[in-house]
Length: 107
Figure 1: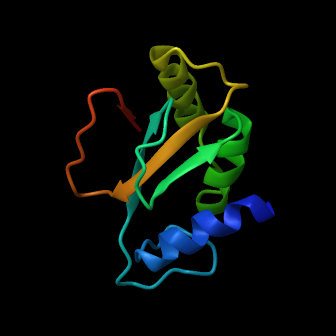
Figure 2: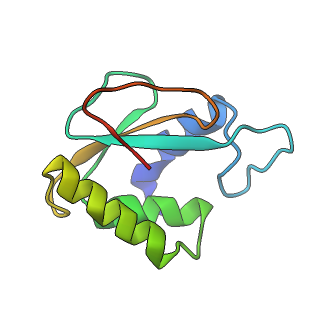
Figure 3: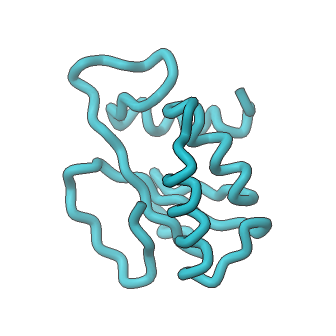
């Protein structure tokens, strides 16, 4: 595992999210995320260096990440005007909660 993911994983585990390796309590919460070109300055907002860097992270919770999800991610980048080679931020939140951001794309 990429050691750069450790702070992200620790923050998600601390918040009770279960879609993580070796952390699957039945009472855990599912997470979702939004991609933005900037940080929202929350404790669950993290910078990724490229789309491949983020895909590597996503594969920790979903080793067989579907082609469809990868295509949705690529479309999201295009809609946000981001290059897949540039850095961006991912803002995680509890899946069932409504989370509003005028400049975000929800996956």
